[in-house]
Image (cartoon, rainbow, N blue to C red; front, side, top):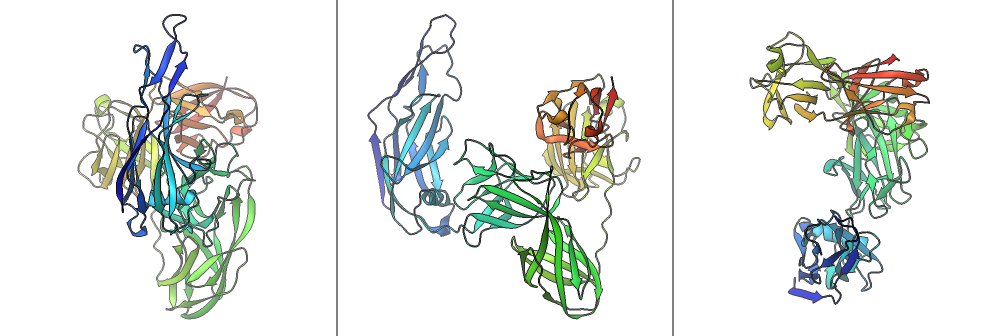
Length: 570
């Protein structure tokens, strides 16, 4: 790689007059840049190597002469006045460019091999093709003001060919997960099976590095990216956990989720397979003889897409598998599949995911041991011994996800020695304590641990516990509000009562409430409660039965600690 420092200076400085509020009427403030912005790099000939995706490919540096000042130093410059971005183009006039935003106060940016290769692909540069690329810094000072630009750099970049057949599933924080979707023909349409939680939210990142989410303007199940819109939201699966066949179409800008509740096996073997989301496998216990068997696998799925939304309606769609025992694929009509049962007797028949688009059938001797069902409640003790003076079993968390054995609820902490979690009230032997990692706000649990879980400062919190994953998470409660009544999804505050954890609001039922009321903690759609029959359930759909309430005024009461809610006539 040829190394040569490049430095060119643009001719124009940025001087802008701006009127803002001042202590005296008639004051005029001037926003000025101190000097011109100069951008430089250490490389002008770059050949990208697929085998070194995380290696540093390009470093851009620019000076801080573009910092803004006010003529009156006593008046602070508003946040967000200055925004910078790196623009790249194949033409000197930047008529067709791609950009990368840069945080305010940052004066350098590094591209890895993979990131720079993605930028080249977005510009339309083919793998193996050497292209001249022009780079500059774009600076915007507030709204309705023409942007300014740095000097322009000229680089020569040779990218490698990008495999556009794979896209990556990101979590709600846009972090990589182990899941992928596939586009075998590299046509921008990604598909695959996935085992997901109810209301699981996610993003998708394609091989170009473009992140896809839900369009902020086109509605549910419409996809977009920041390259197409100013803002995108996360993608949401419907409320039912299970196995979904997912399609993300980045060409026509939509995605769909096909829920498969069960699969029926017919032919030489008969039965119904159920999906185990923890292992991403379909399973069924059968009693059969060894030898070759001919079977079909089919079912009826529930399709959610841009025409249905996530709950209001859905479409029934046939689901089937076709192919061979070690290479099964999704289809709408089943074909006969030949399988080989290696031993006679009780067998566990499994459908195991090989790739997001491929399943394989296997048989294992024996039958599945039934898993002990999760208890409906998980008890706390020690969390309020500074108030109560003792350890007791008066408080509990309610089960909201039986597969993960996940529990959540409100808890008023005022603890001297920390606390533990207990399987049954009065049973001191079966407990979970501190697992050695974490702090008062979250960490790892350990079954039978001698060490107590460290308690936070005195106050009201939401405690979320996952026994399968041995985790705990603590969220302080600042505000409580409700949303969804009369199909109005604005966030309406509730009033704290003298009893810790109890909140009330006078509500007026006047219209249809199709989705039920949800209770939001700190105005969060993630830390929230739904439920039914007067019981709060963490992260669930809105309350059952709200739509059946007669029009009129009610007092809505929510008790976070006892995990209950109620409506009373006024």
